[in-house]
Amino acid sequence: MGWIDPAFPKTATPSALVGRVLGLNPGLMTGPGTNTYLVGRRDPILIDTGAGVPDYVPLLERYLAERGFTQPSRVVLTHRHRDHMGGVAPLRARFRGLSVAKMIHKDSGLPEPIEDLREGERIEGEGVTLVPVYTPGHASDHLCYYLVEEKALFTGDVILGGSTTVIPADDGDLLAYLDSLRRLAQLDVRRIYPAHGPVIENAPAKIQEYIDHRLMRERQILAALGDGLATIPDMVARIYADVPKELHPTAAMSVESHLKKLRKERRAREIVRRDAPSRWELV
Image (cartoon, rainbow, N blue to C red; front, side):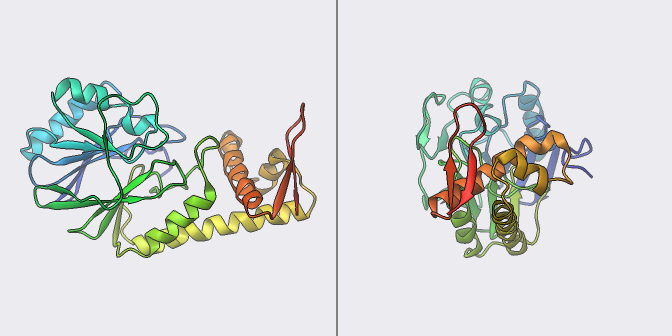
């Protein structure tokens, strides 16, 4: 199955405490779409809201009815990106008075009102306890949610099922992202519920795989710099030679995030040019 899997179920019940409703927004960046999760035995907590696709709310309502639920008790968001919080307004239109919370950090233009949510604050539902874990890197406001009863983690975009995570140029930070992965590796996590793709059963192995992948990419970039490759397009062409060309713009974002990390660590420097791509070199 590919990353964009048309057979990926639109709804699923991966455990007695967790239901999944797909955001119906497949694409190169989202795979089969954004997973939203209903957590709890009655009036469940909804994690993320999808992108606001019109068919999402009817799909959510059908799944709620199948489970014998009336509506979500509240919404908590992993981060500000549109495919995770774009559905807030349609949900509020359907479920009046629905409370929505996220970590308020470097935000502007949020759908009001949004409650501020901080690491370690316990979110109690029917038979469930969620604990936010601050995990910046993909986004500066990113929270994962630890489900105490299952020793499971809702990872948002920090860890995905079937792909690696993009570190955006504007608000991403690879150094912070690696620190977040290492923090997650210290938690007692058995299962991962990612925001894109299927459930991940061996959480410790997946977290380590993500760390190892980033360190491997860093070694490749350092080798490219050592061989005199100085621009991001040249590095992408070499490092991602076996990746389809339509994915090279995304790969360029990854290379740029690594170079910025190396610059922070004073292991590489950027030479900015007015009418050409920046050149990079080892320090």
